[in-house]
Amino acid sequence: MSESSEAAMPTVDRAARGVFPRNSILCALVVVVALLAAIRGELAAQPPAKGKVAEAMADRVYIGANRCGVCHLKEYKSWQTSKHGKDAWEKVPDGYRTDPECLKCHTTGYGQPGGFKDAGSTPGLKGVSCEACHGPGSKHEEVCKPLVEKKKLSPEEKKAVRESIFPMLPQNVCVMCHLEQRHKEHPKVK
Image 1 (cartoon, rainbow, N blue to C red):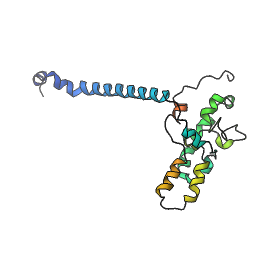
Image 2: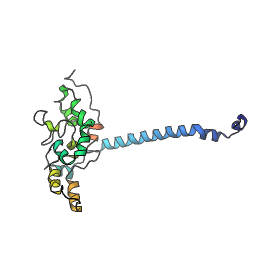
Image 3: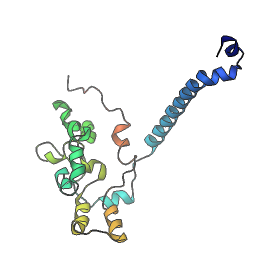
Image 4: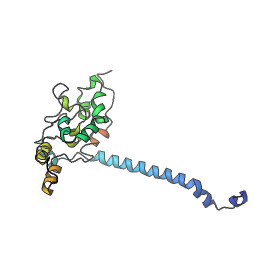
């Protein structure tokens, strides 16, 4: 194209070749950030699910990730190398490992019946294991053991399996630790 023909091009054509796409991308990014902020605020404002879920989970006990790994070996191996599996406990400084505020997010089941008490008496519940997200596994193990050899489950069996684990809604699980800024300098640890 010659300079004279380019100069004669309408302004819209030049804008369409460069300015608008950049502005569109910037505008899209702003919209995405705004939506994420709105969702984050909405999820943070929602209380954890209670009532029927809490009642249903009351008779379950924590069994530890090793027992989950017996049937869910692929997931267990993946978890072992994840940040939840490796870092959630190991990167917590020694002085913080008895702080209730830290233990809520860096252990499994802290403050719950049968959950983490301390590293000596409940070592299988250190860190963020399967049951930190899926809930205590005893009922799931009980329901699933008789079904292990079956090739196909009936609709009733599938329902029983689904109901034997904690409903993983963001307000039940992730939001409890990941939307709160808990990492502050501990007054007792310098």
